Length: 510
Image (tube, rainbow, N blue to C red; front, side, top):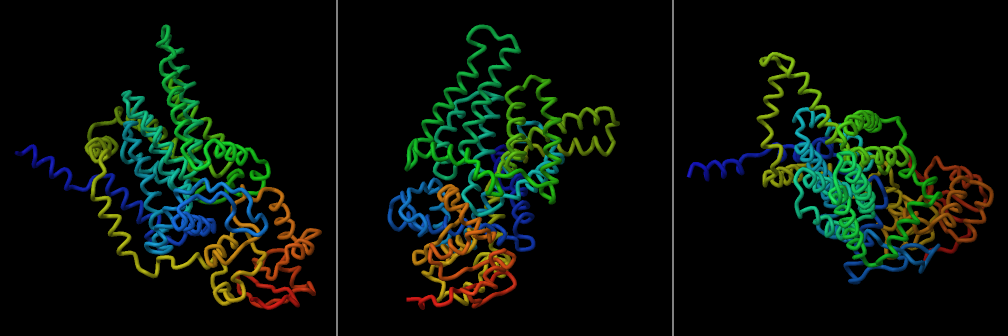
């Protein structure tokens, strides 16, 4: 009876992980009402409308839904499952529910990263410091877009791999069905495939260095090779089959995408989150040296590979920091304990280490208190903090509202981000020239769009050829200044963010 009562008391007591999830939700989003920041990327708009199309028609789109410039073109809605989730959330509670759902996925990712630190025998306090750095660095990509599911599934997959390394079990094969789901949520499943290749090579190198004999030397590599095959087969369970893989490969190899899409370019070290990334990068490289010395080749290869990927593309920074945070916390804890052993037992550092050991049971358990705490945070957030629309600081929300009767259904030249917003606001009545689907439009439309935005030679011909009635331009665009001087256009509205021009002599809207 006492044992049963003790077990019940344990589950009725909030754990460290329960408290962490609630604190992350407060820190990242609730305090200061930063929910709207999750909608800072207009792609969320067309993702929601795509999900609604799937729900209403009961099928995946195979041709374009949103443009007049590539009407009927073959389009891969390769994040369809995430889009359905966003559409359902939007139906449930509008953009507020979309933001809340994305926030919960993000903080759950942080909890899994913290849980992985438990496997590294990391000090609780050092783990918290490293996690704060990782969350700060990853915040550059905290947006309500399908990639949030990769932010969740990536550390979950790494956790499964690390548990298997400590004690091999059949649970490793859960990565295959996980890949099937992941493939339909976001293209980030390719990160797992690349990592499995490195794990197979690393495990073979570890056994070779250890002097394993015969087939013992190859068993771990063969196991990860078989797992790679199973995950690869599982990734074919998607609406487009193997064609999706060819499309993603072409997208990732595209030099044009790497040159014009900001998140595919190298990170810029000019902000707080980039400082967090820089600190973790240096710490991870130092940890990698110790990891290689201990002949954990697979773990070291992953760190070096993803460090390179993060330096090449800011898009990979969250993947890198979520990968290396447990290793950094583990190596820092090892050095910390070496130092503590040289101190008196009653020193502050020794006392902190003892407290950390006492807290370890709560390091590993997540219960219903996290659900209750997250629900309380969401329920008590002031209504004024929840987004009713996209952020007015980034999108021409008020101008579009004033001019809705003019803009709905008209041909409007605007930024790709604002075109995303027009899709959200007016679809199915609105078709756009170019939105955030850079993989769909490619360089043919993309270069023409950039030439017009920048006011380079030929821009008037582009506006004429596509018969644009309106130009909705950010005030700082060179195009906005040129249209101000152009005789064929007149300014009809404007504010501190945007200006709207209409073609002179254009027929009135139907």
